Image (cartoon, rainbow, N blue to C red; front, side):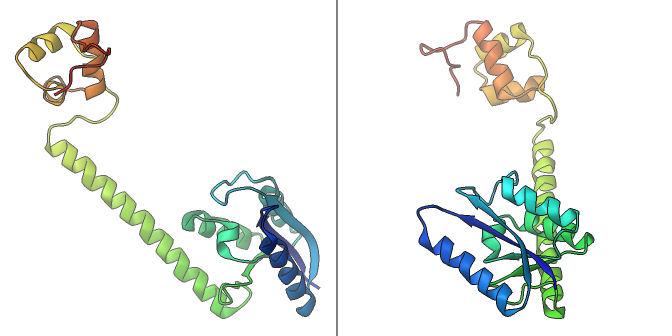
Length: 203
């Protein structure tokens, strides 16, 4: 008989959370699965990975105390596609399967579920590639505009003051001396180019 770890995120004010747990228990009874333990996080966001019961669940999976993780819905387990894929990949290495009660096809114990997992993994990788591509395009755009990347350089107070006196904006000064607007602003404050409220007189 397989040992199942039931995971749930619940709210003490939400009665449907209790109903969800009951459905998962009934599912295990019908499938003749042994519930090793229930891991229930109360009032915890799915975006947090340091949920205490969530971490206990993963530790028990790592130690092979359970064979399958059962959740009511994927969004009760994780709100991040990347985190979901990474976590399921990790538990699969331990020989532990993952089943979502509501998403019937998301069951890594079946061939269809394995296929579904690979499709979701491909989308997660596609998302990562798109983010990387957008980042590279933005960096190339900034370089083409003459904006230097990396840690801001210290501004030459006198030179900043002279350029400001010539009517250059903060951005123009930054591009001229190779630093960002905040560094220019700090230099202007020290050179007494400040407004009545203590902020830079920006253009």
